[in-house]
Amino acid sequence: MQVVDSGQHAAERPHSALRSFLSIVIMVAVVAIITVLLRLFVFVPYEIPSGSMEETIMTGDMVFSEKVTYYFREPQRGDIVTFDDPEVAGRTLIKRVIAVGGQTVDLVDGKVVVDGVTVDEPYTNGKESYPLSRTATDVTVEFPYTVPSGYVWVMGDNRTSSQDSRYFGAIPVSSITGRAALVYWPFSDFGLLS
View 1 (cartoon, rainbow, N blue to C red):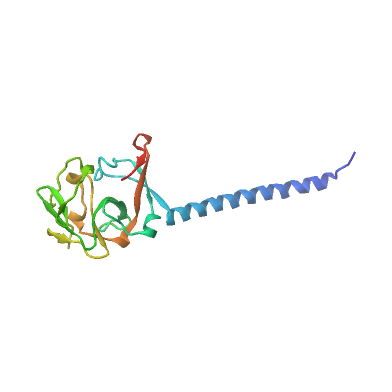
View 2: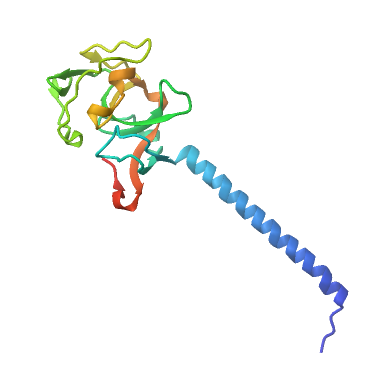
């Protein structure tokens, strides 16, 4: 039978407790760093505050906006994008890309026409698209409108309730923060966005 010095055993306990505490601190730090890196470079969650994208995305839905796609390609027509609000610093908006740099947008008899071709837009549920009666301060939007290079024209799917490029003009591609890819909450609305 081996006899253990009680003093030695007591000294091991604080050392073991310190090791456990440091392990937890390191684990929490690693999780925090991974979370920050994911938000900076991979995806960001957003809650939808308004009805401008209904019925595609409902008010109160939670969506993931992923960033990886735009490391490999530019935004394309049909993409649903999150971007910095041109008017309110720190606020993020979500809309659909309708036209890209160099394309000409027109609104004719309630339809969107890009480069002379009427766009098929089933996501609007038949809501017509007309110019807005007013625009943002110091912004002029006249149709037909040619989107400048490095910009995109965005519109909400709920055309009768959306302040979009008809209001603030085309937005710079550099202001886009990601491509909205997935509604993850509420679970009844769960699904990929297209």
